[in-house]
Image (cartoon, rainbow, N blue to C red):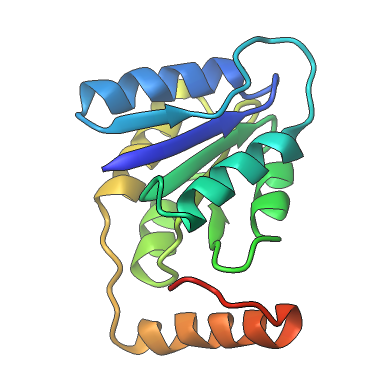
Length: 154
C-alpha cells in the first residue's frame, strides 16, 4: 500500500518517525515534505497529499502539523477527501470503520511518539465496515456534489 505523507515544520520530527515506522511495516511512502524544520505553511503539504490520494498515486495519506487541526481543515477542502484528526486509537479505528477516512491528521505537539505510531497502525489496519455506513459516506459525497459541483472520485 502506498501512503502519501506530509508535514509542516511543526510536524516534521513526527513525520520522520512515521516514515521510518511505515517503511519497517512494508508500506511504500511518498514524502511530499517538508524536509527541514524551517518555518513553512501547512496548507501547501495538505494540498500535495490530498491530490496524491485523489489522483490514485497513493492509497491513503497522513498529515502532521503542530495540532493536526490546520492540516485537517485544509485537506477536507478537497472533494473526495475524508480527513480525520485522531488523538487516540479509538478515533482512528472509527474513522476507518464508519467514515472510510482516507487521510489521517495528527498533531506533533499534542501526541507522544508511541501513541502517534499506535494511532497510525490502527488506522492503516482497520478496513471500512461498509453496510449502513456506506450510505452515510455516499451522503457526504452528495453534499460535496451539491456544494462543489464537481465530479468526485469514489
